[in-house]
Length: 460
Image 1 (tube, rainbow, N blue to C red):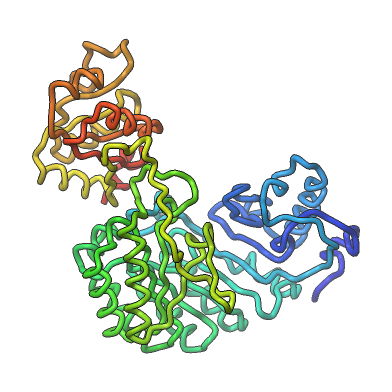
Image 2 (image 1 turned 60 degrees about the vertical axis):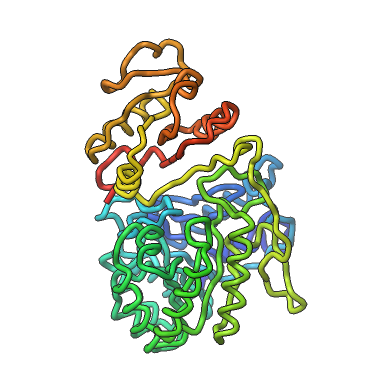
């Protein structure tokens, strides 16, 4: 039963600095529990997951409130914070993300590099709060990760939450079918979100990094037979913005009985800051999201606009609902991409190397450091030979890295055309800028985060 000791009595009726999340939100992360995941301040970790209990949760909040008295406190940097009179509220929103491992390799996602055996049983941690009535009756449980259906306790936890009467939102890639999710959908207090981000099988395989196209659509069809609360998302970026791709997507949704569509944008490309890639939200993508909305509404779908990307330059209708931007905002960094050279990325090293082999142009790795060496080694395992290494470090000139000769950028660009250049390391944007300065436009440029070059398991 609820105990007043959890109410942070010393602050009741007093002015504190905080936000709506304080005391009302709990995130179950792979190794920690936290208050929020706000981008402006980072993950506000409250403790290790094995230490999670009501006493430690509310003690961590007490410490956070004390810290927020200082003007340099982390929460002070967030625009969601303000001073207000504290009143105790029960927890009403919980994210359940017990693992970062995923069996999908979505091209825009970097949250799938955890170990396959990661994860833990959430029920023991949740039960204590539930028994002490610290969750509100309408507490919302939001599943994510990583891929939640891979957790060995997922089915049991979904069942337990459903029996307790809590509302769940399950975000899944749809590769695995969950019987307990189907039962929870039938109960009416669960919704399901699946990002498909494509229409055709070819585009799906590139966007998701795997070939479970028909499997995922079959699962969507079966889930839709259990409930109307199945939401299918289309995350628009420069790799899936062709109108025909959108038309095929709408056709598949109709065939599977989908009622709700979510229109989103690749979040790093749709931002107020200048963007150099490898994801772009150009005028083509602007037209694509509007075409998707028009076509979906014409076909009778309920359409939601995602706040994940579009809230950064939010526009609202007369009812106060978020709508798609009505004016195109060009945020391409023309200082870096001044000659029209743009970067391409891939869902895995395998996709990149197969693409490179098809083009057959000379392959160049820019960067002779640790990442560049790993890149060369990984390419060799996939049967791709590197012709040259580009590096501005004069010490490396005349040497060889992994058996490959090193050249200065200007020397290479003056004597070679139509190369395939792989940018490595954290200074890839500066490298891209130099390519434009040299007006070396007859090339293909690729970028993959360095973690892709470190282990074979990341490149399936």
